[in-house]
Amino acid sequence: MKEDYYNVIGVMSGTSLDGVDLTHIQFKVKNNKWTFEILESETIAYSSSWIQSLKSAVDYSKEQLKKLNQDYTQLLASIIEAFIEKHKIENLDAVCSHGHTILHQPQNGFTLQIGNLPEIATLIHQTVVCDFRVQDVQLGGQGAPLVPIGDRILFPEYDYCMNLGGFSNVSFEQDQQRIAFDISPVNTVLNFYANQFGFDYDDKGTISRTGKIDTNLLNELNALDFYQKKHPKSLGFEFVKETVLPLIESFEIAIEDKLCTFTEHVALQIALALPNKKGSLYITGGGAYNDFLIERIQSYLPEMKIIIPSTKILEFKEALIFALLGVLKLRGEINVLSSVTGAKMDHSSGNVYYSK
Image 1 (cartoon, rainbow, N blue to C red):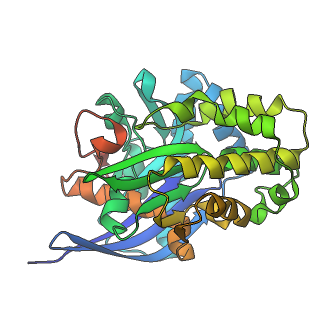
Image 2 (cartoon, helix red, strand yellow; image 1 turned 30 degrees about the vertical axis):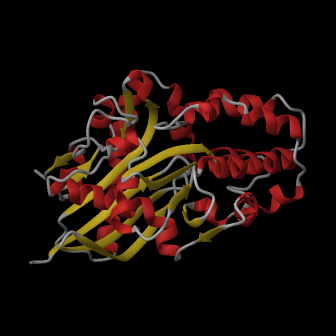
């Protein structure tokens, strides 16, 4: 049977706002077995003004959002074009881009990822596959998480695949179905408090480690309604802004104690979320560098083998999987699982734009 080959770029911008992740990937498919090679990868940091705009956008008017979307599409196009030029990448089948989530309200039938306007294809002179979440929400799904189909296809040897980014999410097989859901905020909250010390993030969890757990705060965090809900379920920055931060801020305790307590909360919620406390847990995302958080997760899951992969996969797994979602869309194959999102059916999501 012939081997299919795809030369693509995956582009991702996450809620932790550390920048735009780009990764050049070659996929090969033979007998339904997928292999991949990550070639060049890079994270292009946002300027402080862009970070401010993306943080504030949750409160923007429709007109402001429209303008932001146009500006961000231009920004993203310039970043992608520079990446292609810098690495002399040729003969691309597609650029597969997630865009940046500004609003995520599946309960209201709405999700908005900016940077997915049709003109992006013409701006970068490439075929672009993007905007993977909207169709799922229209089909009654959460529009998230979308990475689990990639876990199933590319990382089938692990019992659990977990990403520790702005939020934590997990995916695993149960009764021959892929199950996945968001667990809790992670870096959206930890970075907020690290920023108060003048740091972008709490390096290796060193500040959190110096704090003390505030039992009352921990109990109140653990009692939040979201944690009682059954999957499918997903989180947006609105939850952090409207619920989590006001709760933490109502406690007059040291920032170190807030960090320490929230880290404990994240670790506990992760342990509670896994139906089986044994096996292998494959962790990616920026939170995998937080040694203190990993130690706390391990303490709640003593029989779990935690695997942290190479830097390329750890930092660029989401960009890698959005590249896969784009290729699946081009092949007309399912790239979103209803068992994960709660949509009416499995489907092939995303828009394909061609350069004019």
